[in-house]
Structures are given as C-alpha cells and as structure tokens.
Image (cartoon, rainbow over all chains, first blue to last red; front, side):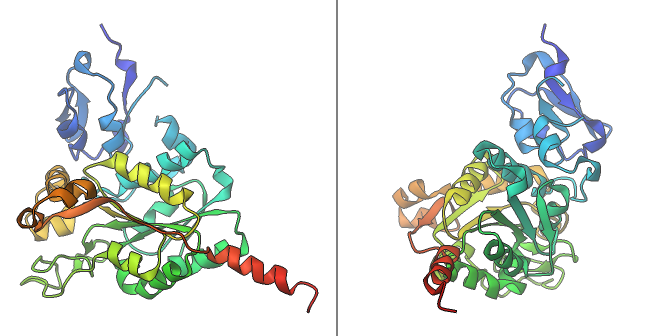
Length: 64
Length: 273
C-alpha cells in the first residue's frame, strides 16, 4: 500500500482545469466539485506529469 | 503547502495567480523557474523583466529581482539593466502582443545588438488581458473580438523575425511539451547573446472560445497535433508540411555580444578622457 503523502494537492490553488487529470498516464486523478481529487493513489507511478503541467502549482510530488 | 521549487522561487503570498483555468502561462512560468533551478543560478543575480499583458504578470509572482514595466518596453528596460550590470542574468517575459506589436521595434533592435538577454514570448495568439483583440500572431482567418469575421492579416513568424534581426539562439516550444520549454530556456540562458524563445501557449477564455478550440486540455492536445520537431519536419514530404508548426531549436549563431563590445570601447578610451 502506497502512502498518500507522495502526491500532494494544495486545494486552494486548484482551479479545476483538468489538465492533470487528462495528462495523467495512469488515471490517478479526477475532478470533484470543480477541484482535483486523488482517485487511485496505488496506480501512481510518480512520473510527475501532473506537477510539470499544472498551471496553478496545486499538485506536486514529494513529502513535505 | 506548495512544492520546494515554488516555495523557493515564487512569492507564494501572491498565489493563486490571476490566470484563468486552463491558461498555460502558469506552466510556462514554472518551466522558466525550473530551468533557472537546473542551472543553479544565484537567485539574487537574476533579473526578470516583463511588459504588460497576461504573461507579463509573471514577474510579480516570481521571487527574483523583478521589474514590471510599460507596454512593449520590457526589452528597452532590460537593455538598460544589462548595460548597467552586465553580470546579471536578464530574462524578459513578454507576450505576443507586447513583443511583436507594441514592442516590435525593441525586439528587432535587441536582436540586432545581440545583447545577452533571454526573451521568452508567451504566444497565446491573442490579446488576453484587454479582451481578446487579434494580435500579430493570430493566424489568418481566426477570430478575435476585433476580428468577428476572421483576421485578414498574415500572422508573424516570430522565430524567423528574430533570426533575420540577428538573434544568436532562436527556438520554439509548445505547451504540449513542457520539458522542451525547460531545455530551451536553459540553452537560451547559457547562450552569450540574444536568445529568443517562442512558447506556444493557450488562452481558452478568449482565443479558445472565439475560435471554438475547446478548453485548456483540448487546446494543449491541439498544439501537440499541430507542432512537429524540426528534425522530423525536415524529413516530411512537401504535402504533409502544410499547416505544421516547427518546434525545437531553429537557429544558433555566433556574433560579438553587445555589452562585451561596449566594455571594449570603455577599456580602449580609458586615460584618454
């Protein structure tokens, strides 16, 4: 079981554009009530596409 | 909380930024910061200069020496900053309207001088901040609020313009490939001379809506289909080249750099006056 700490979401910065959801190669994320939400953390391969593409700095890898 | 990168290089108290959902400006700004981080530059020795427009708001969010200047004049301010302190890494963030219309003259002369400035143009094909007027890079036939029946002008090829004017590093990248933006900004900063990087970005609010190109996601996918790397383009038969936009490194030259030449003049006349 992977820990959820590796993929972080700053919900206040999310504008719900859906770019991270669309470009995630493993279908880890979803939009819920206009904001991003982790749907399936176990599928995450930590490729970093979400962090690279998020225009709002609302999602990132790494514990903190 | 935000990532280490954002915490280090952004004025985090200013976030969230003003850019619309699906706008690519935030992604390009992060790519610039990532390139600076990869190069290990001293944050206090970097100066970001911007003009006016959506893209130019980036300077306000970044924690470097930053100047948010007047419309089209970012390169003029940057030229002064670089001459006054040639040790600074000077980066100009500008938009297609700011750089190619209002500041078009500054662009060609900065390129002609080959002054050591890296210019990154956020090309979203429209004037976003002022309400969607067509810009010099709006493709022919596309719509804007001031071109409700389609734009009849030919759009500028900014990279060709920069090459002709004398820039020594010219590249184009697209939001469909953010890693390419990072790489090109690194190369641009490393180049001792005028570097020009055109980044194709998205404006779903105006350009997208006016031209029925969909939301941010669809516009990024469209850019991915429309762009082609220069190496692959050169191998394509003529009929398949139509409507493709070349991305990648377009040009690299080698000419004397302006501030170095200026310093030589100063050295040569020392003691004479």
